[in-house]
Length: 74
Image (tube, helix red, strand yellow):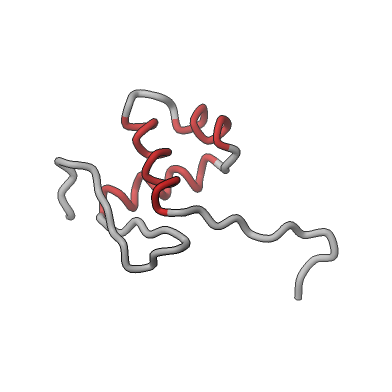
């Protein structure tokens, strides 16, 4: 059941998520990048974690996977 005034859930492309994570990797804070991009900081934290694990996927490409160089899967 949906709430009467609920907004649809945002779906971000893999490219958008990659760019957001690159900003964090470039010494910007997760909170600052999230605020600038209009996403919740916990969501951005999950994207950073997914990059490290090699499991980041985007809205349009469920099978695309990308990770930062030097970040091995554990």
